[in-house]
Length: 297
Image (tube, rainbow, N blue to C red; front, side, top):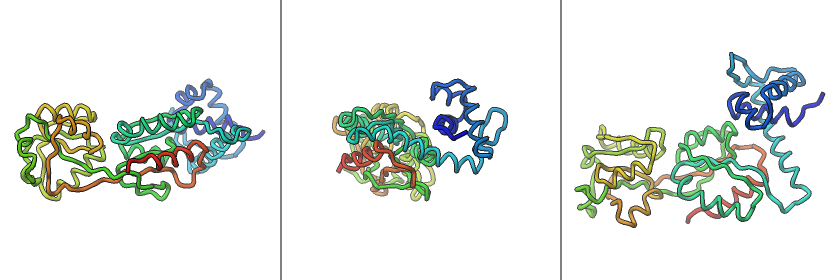
């Protein structure tokens, strides 16, 4: 018996989807077909690929090594299909991005890329930076755009965009009438603050900087929706610290007012990340180049 692409695809899908049920739906196969493929692969290799505990499947150390090779082989097989038409780039791209990039920049970049390469299918997932970094590490994503530091020898990070964070108030807020003033964090510590959830890289960056100067902030509302935060701030309820990308349009329309905060004159770097040493498909290679060329200057 030889190792088949179906067996490798089953291994990759089960690991990516977290179980046989979702993997079967993803590949369009029955549960028994997935289970048999995994059993045959283990039998051929003579090793256990998973530690089995009830319905939970966790890769063994050897399973992790096999999975890495399997993903490379599957990517190469996908590229093999294009050899007869060298100029044609097709395939699937799984892209992860922090909210400022995923919601405000990547949609137009992805649309322009698909217009150039119409046979590429893109799945764009907007998520916190830490989740995107984990997705790249586990090869659940092909490429990602993150605003958090990347500290992994397995991930290659390329600086992609500089993005200032800005403190905003709504037009009805009393501080909006003093927009020309230079505030200190101590001046603002007892104001009402509206913040993103703690897994947001914007929240993390702001909190780390703020706690250098004040002991605490008066946080009255937290949300994982940036749009909800902007609406609350526009009403005059409180202040927020958000990515300049996110609030540019509202500031230009006068719906939000940027405040000058002496201690918060800092810029965050968004990075483009991929998994180091992974086989790079033609579609990924093309999109990586395209995204670097399309980044705002």
